[in-house]
Amino acid sequence: MTKSETIKILIFLNCCYGNKFKYPCKTVIETAALEETWLSFLHNFSYTDARKAVKSLCLQNPTWPPTSAEVAHEIISFLDPNEESLSGPEAWRLVLRSINRYGTYHGGKALRSLPDLVCDTLEGIGGFDRVALSDNKHTFLYENFVDVYESLKKKKQKAALMPVVCETNNSTGSLATTEGGVYARQLKPQSQPQA
Image 1 (cartoon, rainbow, N blue to C red):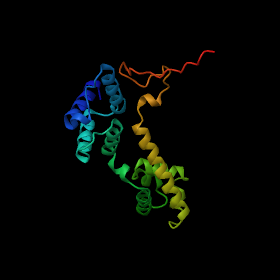
Image 2 (cartoon, helix red, strand yellow):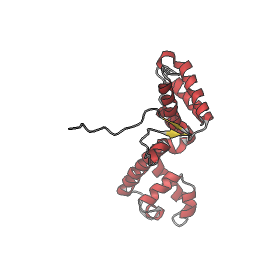
Image 3 (cartoon, one colour):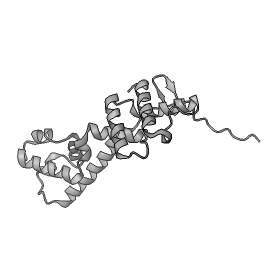
């Protein structure tokens, strides 16, 4: 998204929520900070996806406006609904179904039929062969798979929501920089009292 598209989203939220969501803010600095905050969370997404997510969140909670992080999370759930909604036990059932369909010795075909996160989980617990050659009643393997799957799923969701500014080394101390804009407020080291 661009800054002008982010502003359109902010204006839409202002129209929907009135006094509960003020845009523009009282000062130019506050307005710039609000725009940069929203842009830092949404710049990796398309305007169409962001608009769809905002409308969905407005319908889900007409009383309080969504935050920029909530909108980003909603976009992620729209973009990858199957993998996001798949629980650990459901992913395990997909693995077992794939083994039954392709057999023990056609791991390549079986892996290509599975979502990426399930394949990553299998790799994390010892690979497709370990599950395919075990008896499917092995509860330790099942529990290990579910734990690893849920952990990877949370990491993937966090990574998808993480603003780029948090991923890079930010030596200037500013809260965020995007497309030439800088937050008005910067983190400054506290000065030591003089003796």
